[in-house]
Image (cartoon, rainbow, N blue to C red; front, side, top):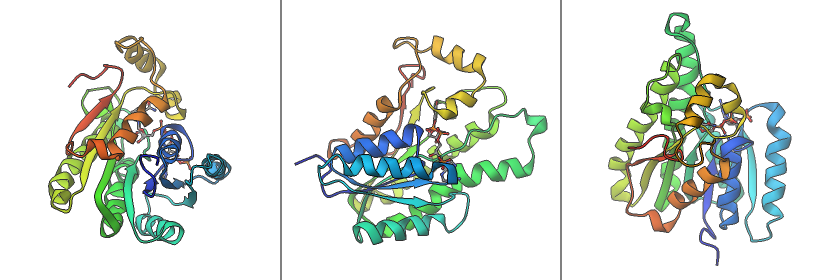
Length: 253
Ligand SMILES: NC(=O)c1ccc[n+]([C@@H]2O[C@H](COP(=O)([O-])OP(=O)(O)OC[C@H]3O[C@@H](n4cnc5c(N)ncnc54)[C@H](OP(=O)(O)O)[C@@H]3O)[C@@H](O)[C@H]2O)c1
């Protein structure tokens, strides 16, 4: 039997990039997966991933939900769709969806702050709140942060603050949900091949690549997905409240 057979997972931002690989890896290990995307142009990609999961023929199924995590009721809609597809228990939540924001301080507006924090912090908070009543012990919550939560990079103050906020939330929820048998952890990818990496200033991305001890290269989504899948599994049960750097040693804690 596959390691995650019979488990139900929600992975936000799984139409493309890191999230798509996380959803596929969890499905390869046997989980049923809710794929969440937001942009109309990503609908086809999300559906393609669902078909790829069905084609695994290992019993894993996927359902696809369109939801903007910056909107207050998104979490409840994602949970309702998951329950409609797979029943009343949820085992794994991966809060992966996030937006990059790169702007110098003097150009940053209150509206920018709301836009990034609503998606990167409030979205995961409200989705987690909607999931917890259905979370079956030992539940696994994995929040996708960034090495940016720990290092200072010019013009990335709001992005870094949102990821540091997500990590603080993870630690407090690890304390709050431990009695129920759940773990909550963060993962900090380093620069990883994806559409988002294409939006990082080239000089900054190149500097990070050069400072990455393992191979002096960018990470791949499948390398980050392996760590997420381990955190989602039984073997990680004694690990909670941690922020794990998956960055080829770029960020050493
Ligand atoms: N790539 C890197 O180098 C890197 C490094 C460190 C941390 N991270 C973190 O890893 C996560 C995934 O990054 P990525 O590189 O895969 O990003 P990406 O290629 O830009 O993909 C972003 C994903 O998030 C979804 N999303 C964006 N805004 C959303 C919203 N308001 N509501 C719902 N879904 C939304 C997108 O959906 P649509 O397809 O519908 O737009 C897409 O599936 C992010 O949290 C990011 O901060 C990435």
